[in-house]
Structure formats: structure tokens, C-alpha cells
Amino acid sequence: MSERETWTSRVGFILAAVGSAVGLGNIWSFPFQTASNGGAAFLVVYLLAVFLIGFPAMLGEFVIGRRSEQNAVEAFRSLGFGEWSVAGGLGVVGSFVTLAFYSVVGGWVLSYIVGSVTGAYLGDPGAYFGAVSAGPIAVATHAVFMALTIGIVALGVTDGIERATKVMVPAIFVLIGGLAVWVSTLDGASDGYSYYLSPDVSVIAGDLAGIVPSAVGQAFFTLSLGFGVMIAYSSYLGRDDSLPADGSAIVVVNTLVALLAGFVVFPVLFAIEGAVPESGGAGTAFTALASAFSQIPGGQAIGLGFFVVLLLAALSSSISLLEVPTSFVVDRTGYDRTPTAVGLGVLVAIAGVPTALDTGILGWYNDVVFNLLLPLAVLVIAVFVGWVADDQLAEELDLGSSFGDDFSTVWLWWIRIVIPVAIGGTLLLGIQSLLV
Ligand code: PHE
Ligand code: NA
Image 1: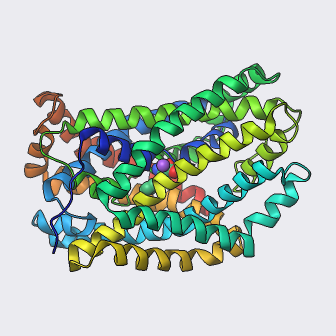
Image 2: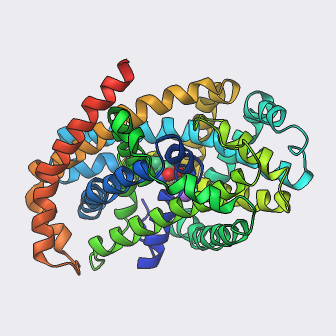
């Protein structure tokens, strides 16, 4: 069995983790969720969830991964708590299933890149979405997206994931920043900003029970928590890294990209009349944006840039989802990485076919995962870190940390008490909103 890989540099790890975090969640769902949930009001709840629950929980995954130097399942066993490896097993299953859905949307993005080049969606955006989002074209683009994902993961942690994200993440930043500047010159820009950011407190007050679980679920999803991705990625880390410093960088950059995405999407939508979709349903983002791109000056080029960003963001996330089951099988059996990644990726591709034929499944996935599965998974991690393996893991946070002992003390109590209470409350609200 070959030796386990490690990231070649600290920046390599940070970019890989940012690549995982920045994805369809930031650029595709976030702006629309914000818009349909009361603008700035949703933003506030979301930011609180990201920084007060997501960030400490991410550190929880980091200490598990770095301490054990193992994949999400074996990590628990190697820390001495084999019974808890069920939690990692759920992560492996969660990653697998999530990737099957994620890749179908990744396939749509491929179709929209082609459509931006050929102008195919300019005439009738609704018909274009119908044609590419479900049916043979969707199956084909999903397969291509999975092939790209498999190719990168098969190359390895440093030669594949690290090398790819080192290029993709800076490209995402430059492109989305450039687009935000460009679209600020559009006619509707200021209306777009105010729609995006003006707080509608009545929305929050009226539907707090609905907003809190979606904001918290969105926060976990965007930070790639709960599926063992951050456990797997941090298992390739050296001891001298400051986990709190790396974690803050990742969370801040991820948040910036999400905010920037709103600064691209809303000026575009407001540049033409009546283009703001009521809800962030699976397809609305694509149809509304495509129809705007077909009407604004330079729309085709802006569209191409936007969908290229979306592809880079989706791909740098999908590779992290495939890495979870891949690292599990490789660590566990000693099989070579390449055939393992190919085999697992093909299974994921097959599992995604029903979604590529019927997009309705996506809504169902969303409800269950965001309201139930992700909060539950993060809760389990928090309990494990705070109450079960707390001795070794609190010490692990201090190794290489630039934040001092007080930080780790507060963090430990935070993860013991505040996070379980907050997630418990969120879960109750989420279950309630699933039932009504
Ligand atoms: N964070 C990614 C996004 O926002 C999705 C993701 C979730 C990736 C969980 C890995 C694990 O699109
Ligand atoms: Na990504």
C-alpha cells in the first residue's frame, strides 16, 4: 500500500477547502434564497449561522480529520470510538447521494455554457431549460460532468485535487469580481442591489420558523459540513497548520463569493422588467438568468462568464464529494485510487440518472437534506467532539494554533452547549416546516 498523501502547502489545503465550499450553493441557490426570504433579513440569519455555528463546527471536522489522519469513517475508529464510525458512514452515503444530484445540475451548467457560445437559449429560454434539464441531454451532460470529476479525483490529492483547485479558485474569484463590476453598469443595477439587500423584517417575523432552518441548512451546505468532506481534507494536513486561522480564511472567502454572486445576479435580473423569480426553485435561476442574458447589452458574454464561474465552482465541489467515498475505500482496502475513483464515480453517475430524467426529485432532496440530514449530521459531530473525544480533540485544536488557549476553551464549550442547543431548535423548526 502506498503512503498516504499530504497537501504540498498550507495554501493548497485552503484553496482545496475553499473550492469545496464555494459551489452551486453560493452562486446558484444563495442569491435566490436570499431574495425569496426577505433579502437582508435572511442574510443576517444566514451570516449568524455561518459564523456562530458553521465555523466552530468546521473546526470540529478539522480536528477529527487531522488527529486521525483517516477518512470520515476510519477517523472515528482510529480515535478509539469505533461505534461512532456510523456517523462517518452517513457522511459517505450523504456525499454519494448529494453528488448524484449535484452532478445533474453540473450537467445543466455545461449545457448553458454551450448555449452561451451558440446563442441557443437566446430565443426561448424556457424551452431551452426544458430541453437540457431533463431527458437524454441531461443524462449526457451529467455523464460528462461526472467524467471530469472522476478524472481529477483519480489523479490524486496533490496531483489532482490540489493542482486543479489552485487554478479554479483564483479563476472563480477573478471572474465573479469582474462580472460584478461589469453588471454594475447595467440600467437596473441599483434597483437590483436594493432588492437584494433591503431588509424586509415583516418576512422574517412572519415566517421565522421557515427561515431559520433554511438559513442554517444553507450555511452547513455552503461550508461543506456534515458529509465528512472537511474530515477527509484535513486528514491530509500537517500538524503545524493553525486550524482556526485556516478555518476563518475558508469561511470568510466562501462568504465573500456568496455575497458577490448576489451582486452579479440581481443587477442582471433587474436590467429587464419583471424578471425576478418569486421562488428559488430548481429551474427558475437558470430560466430567469438566461432570459435576462438574452435581452441585456453584452448578455451573451456575461452569460458565458457566469456559467463558466458556475462550472468551476461546481467542479471544485464535486471532487470533494467524490473524495469522501474514495478516501474511505482507499484507506480501508488499500486499492489503488484510480480504479476506486472510477468505480465509485460510475456508480454515482448511474444513481443520478433518475434525477436527470425528472427534476422533481431535486426539490425533495433539498427539503430532506437541508432541514433534516445536515443539521443532524453536524449535531452528531458536535456531540462527538465536545463530549466524547473532547480530551484529544481540544488539544488537537491548539497544535499549531495562532489563536491562543482561550480561543480553544471557548470553542470547546461552544461546541458542547451552544451548537447542540441551536441545532436542536433548528431541527424542531425544520421538522415542523416539513410537516405543514
Ligand atoms: N459547499 C458546496 C456548495 O455550496 C456543496 C457541498 C456540500 C460540497 C457538501 C461538499 C459537501 O455548492
Ligand atoms: Na466549489
